[in-house]
Image: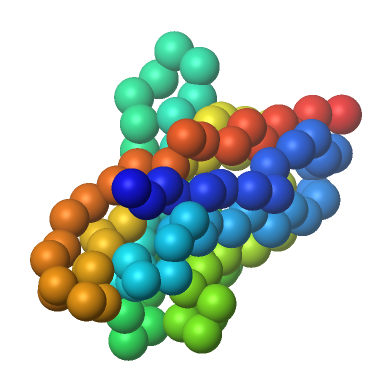
Length: 121
């Protein structure tokens, strides 16, 4: 069994910053491509940013220049640094990861449980 563990959400004022992270609960399961999504209340889930195993990144237009996705493969963790936060960034942030079992090379996808980010004055 493996889970994606998200951490780092919270409340911040407009213009502030937060760092959220996504890690696999067992080290034999290696993160491959990881995608952050968010879902605001009453809205559909939307893609925020993604990163491949070699570090190629992609961002939604709404977060370009403000958010940075990165990874530490040694720690098997992906981060989403969120700067210049706006009230419209308020949402539950989810990570979705393609995972590879380093022993069997079986691959599969998992979703994290979500972490709430609230931007409000």
